[in-house]
Image (cartoon, rainbow, N blue to C red; front, side, top):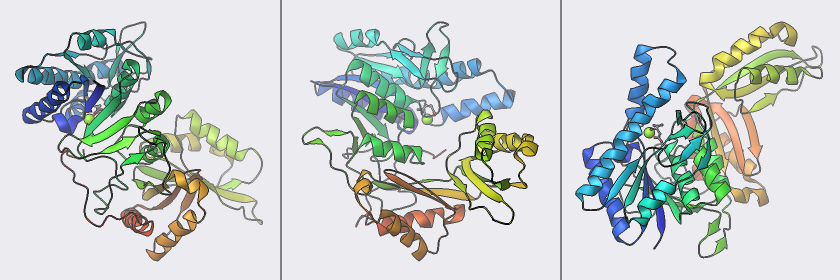
Length: 423
Ligand code: ASP
Ligand code: MG
């Protein structure tokens, strides 16, 4: 008998028929002799609809009230799923994040889990029933205020519960058959990844791959929870995210695991910054003070005659206003000549733990982009990742070219996108 946590995303519980289908899947897992805890997201696009409703009422709704509002979405699906499981003759009880013992800090809208005490869930399992838990939510330690964990946070709820319960596996059900070597919507020849390390998954998720929530992977890595990503629409094998193979021990790494892309970034260029010590510190202190999360940075070689240089950096487009304001406010101190902002950029990232020990990966990447006629505007690397910034209109063809160049294309189409509106 295993203890399995199963998480179903919004597209898997989008309507009554989907909820009934999920109930069947849960019941089958239970009757196969397992203990089952289920974490659900809000139905379909419910969270977005609730956000739209609030936006129609107020430009700046209080964060605490937004959290109360948004957690309602997951409460609806948890109750409906419990009812659907009852319909199939299996005992199930639904719990809010608070009832399930998910304790968070107080940052409404993006709270971090600080403790999980699932005694109530354990009692339900001991009693032989299925426990259903509302994802994406918790409660603050001292004030008992309801919090949410940030968009896509139900994955994190599932992994955190799996860790606290000592579950054998955390199954994340979504609308694709697992993690792929690239987004199948862009690269039809993308291959399903059978097994991947948490380190590579973190790099993929941090660089635009949307299947798993970044914080869920961080949590899984820290607590050693194996994640099994699968489709709720098929019985296909999916992807196992783990650092230790159940049969063979520590995993051997392929050179390249996949190609991620991100078109949600923009590029700020500060032109003519005096090339003297301390300017970069001053510039990025100003940007950091505005709460902006910068990603890549490039500083040009300074021109000898002028003693000035250009500094460019990328950031999420929704933080560009804050960055521009911060830089304008410190223009006199910084002494730069002008400021420009470019939304038309895209980022491609090649990820693979094996690139640590294999030379020539960047050369092959740049060669593939050259052959496709694509210009590279910025480059950054980590031990297991190379990222490049291109024009946004080139991004998709860049991803396809690189995918092909690294021999990742499958012979037959493997990827099926089953559900979701992609909203
Ligand atoms: N319902 C929340 C969202 O849409 C949480 C989740 O789906 O994981 O972001
Ligand atoms: Mg959702």
